[in-house]
Image (cartoon, rainbow, N blue to C red; front, side, top):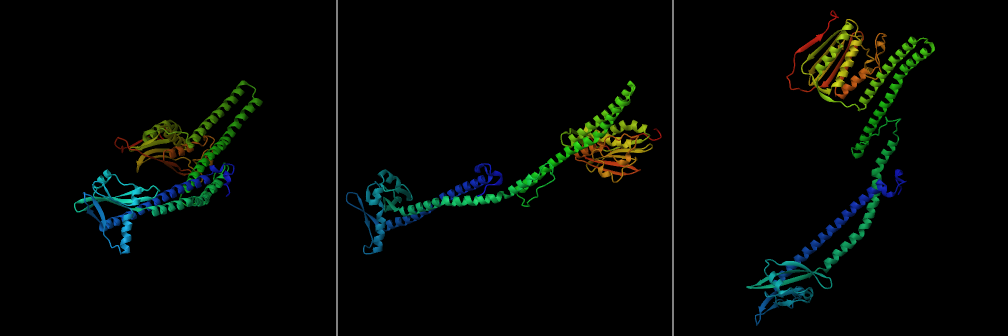
Length: 502
């Protein structure tokens, strides 16, 4: 027998295959021993029942052949009535009298065979107690030589007189059969267990083959190829469940590794340019600045770039914590209509300064269970982009309403729009639409919509975007709504500033 590859360096008792085989053998040892004990008891019970049936027949034979006669002095004697010339009757009576005891009601023995005397005659007290029984009772006694006998003892009525009779039968032959059965069965038991051990050893090997194959396949998975998955065996058993669980774990590890790599890539990509700019400003100042004012201007410019760099790092860290599950949501019942109205009011001055009309509408009860800080961040990012990319004379509309148990937030603008090929990527980190490269705009770092997408996912919602270049964009956020104690508010509220007023 060859040892498993992964267990060659350990003791054989530590092998899973050995432990499975040992458990298999121990189980069968207990099972077979129990079966042997059960059938031995069953065989013994059958033998006793058969001997008991024979004794009942002999009890009837005694009553048929034996009579009790009174003698002088108030004593009694047994008389056997049978044809002494008939060999069959003679043999039957001899067999009946071979193990027999007859006593009167006072316990005086009238007839007792030699074998019965070797078993021990009952005391007068025991005989008197037995005469009170309604039916004869079976009893097993052992002779001095160790031979077991079964006795059927009880009262027998002859007219008005009551006598005690006990007939017996040797159990030597039955005991010999029982002993042979026990000897043969338990002598064969070690060989049966040895065969079970061999069978269990090979069965366990076959059962553990899928586990070894699984271990071999998992050995191919490393940090560089976490995309590998172990194919299911299609058996629907515990091993398939283990494979499914393992693949899920590898998927989570892959996601975590990808997030770490993406974070490193994003940091190196986004920090390279600001650091280069800062270094350039400082080098130019060192080489060309001649007055204190020149140095101050260079330092001020560098500080602005450092501040922007700090904001980028802070935003990137927050987003990475959110996507990795380290940011815990503090959910509470909030009114999305009130939150949207408050956010729109904060952006009214900026919209007015850009000559953009900003309207917001609330329709009905828009209560949701959400993290207020994250909802405000979502609103701020959507409104910030809408105001930033809507040209003068444009319009922005913010609306909240309830529909089919969901609360919908809509932010529509008439801005410059998003090309169709860029729509699938606008929620990626650091992605910025190429056509928006306007020198007069602060385009940020490209993390705002990434935050929006995460916030929506974290609240079990959905977000959809429709946009056309030159006609504007429409963002639709749907979040699970909750019912509040107050009646639904069906009125429509509109607020805002017009182009004329601006």
